[in-house]
Amino acid sequence: MVGIIVGGLAGGAGTLAAHVVPHVLAVAIVFGLSIVLTGAIHVDGFLDTCDAVFARVPPQRRLEILKDPRHGTFAISYFAVATALWLAALFALPIAGLEQNCALAAGSARFAAVLGALDRRPSPFILGLDAVLLAVLSVSISPWAWIVIVAIVVFALLQCTVLRRALSRLTGDAYGCTIVCSEIAALVALVFLPRP
Image (cartoon, rainbow, N blue to C red):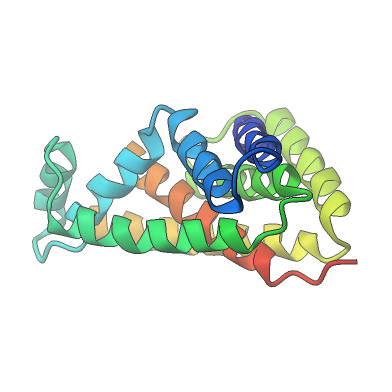
């Protein structure tokens, strides 16, 4: 539910801003708020995970790298790629309905990451509520938007499996990385979604 709220607030702010600033600046507002409203915790997890996972070292050493507060070449390089995709997807989405698209992308990313984090799942009630809210959001976007949710769940489960193998366990940083990657993937998928 938190992802839906954060995505909706960021997308809504971008929609409002688009009435007074150029489209590119409205997109920058959405991008910035998507990070700021979460305290950049997921982006930090993405950066730390990139440094750890792409290092050619044993899993135990990767866990040590995760704890290092400095960011290395892998973190900076992959965040540059992620930022380009994130901004391009936001720019390609229509301003009308941007809040729904951002809410669906952020909400499905967090929902999917929670499903992949076997040891950190909330109650079935919370998962069910999130699923219902995402279904309602998907209907408001397109009859085909549910496909994006399913694809993101599969994507996140695969990513969690890969990260669990690379790190020997799924950490909070890996969880944040999964959220960032899944949200970007959802935004990209929404760009190609047939609209009514």
